Amino acid sequence: MKKILFYIMAVVVISACTSRKANEFIINGEINGDFAGNVYLQQSKDGQFETLDSVVVKNGRFTFKGTLESPDMYYIGIDESRFVGFFNEAADINIAFHIDSVMSPVVTGSESDKVYRVYLKKQDQQRSEEISVYSAYNEASRINDTTKMKEIEASLDALDAKQKEEIMAFISENASSFVAPYVAMRHSYQFNLQELESQMAGFGGKVKESSYANMLAERIAVLQNVEIGKTAPDFTMNDLNGNPLSLSQLKGKVILVDFWASWCGPCRKENPNVVAAYNEFKDKGFDILGVSFDKDKASWEKAVQDDKLTWNHVSDLQYWSNAAGKLYGIMSIPANVLLDKDGKIIAKDLRGEALRKKLAEVLGAV
Image (cartoon, rainbow, N blue to C red; front, side):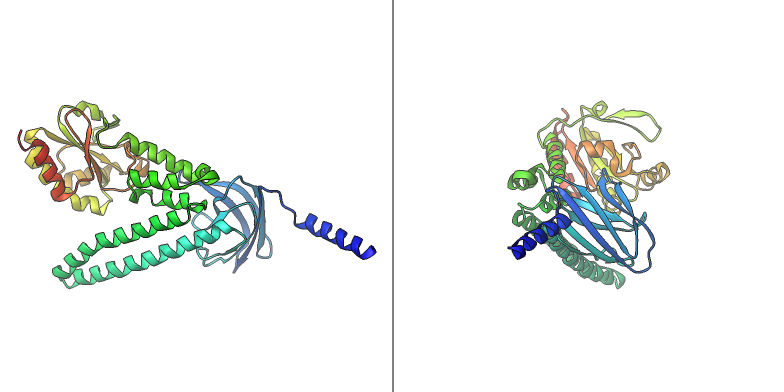
């Protein structure tokens, strides 16, 4: 009887020492290498790190405790440029890393983080593929092998499509994990509205209520508002002279709203095609409103002059936080939206010959 009572008491003591509330997380960390000071538990909010807690590292070890309702992406900040990303959840989690290789932590205890590591491995594989292709392209460029360069350029679209399919498959296969909406949001610039809606429909229960699923829902709402056939949302920004100019002021012409930036290589490469289209159709009722994602006015002005972009230009100099870009759901540039004379969206992301053909279709008979 005494043995039984002792066993029961031992279980109670052990349980008391290791007990954790249902929504509580305990993070036990170990830093290898020469480090002294604080580490910071952080989350990303609107592109900025928000510090939730900080602790002093003692003998290379630290502990964070807290609560959260559902698994989410967290970071352990070392300094302004170094951090460890992981999927946190209500669990006992162990994280170990070397101060010189914070991008390769060993994380145990989080089922969500296991899924996240599978995703990161896939990302590494995709980056290796890209490096291989671009290395071959650079070598062909170095020896001026234009035939090989064209072959590689043609293969890039196939590579992009393949990688997109792999990410879509990962999201579908892990739709019950909180990591899935994180990955969907991270790659949402690659997906059209229908693909995003399909992904959202695949999430169920609490996954659909997670922070990244909510972000995805917001993006879907934005894209629904700028579908082909919808009236283009109006916006006002300052032009190069500092004067406010509204999109609606240009109504009555076929308008290309062109999102670009001076620092964007693909944008600058596409600009000659846009200039050619403008010169061919400007006398037939075509106009362009350039919306720059620049943050330096001098660079913006110089690019306009150097590339001979002789149409209207506006910017709020807010970089990726450009208000018009957010309004239209722009997450990569170059990007554009073509409007008819009534201000309705009739096409998107037209490049090179595709832009000229669409304008010929719309304005050719004018």
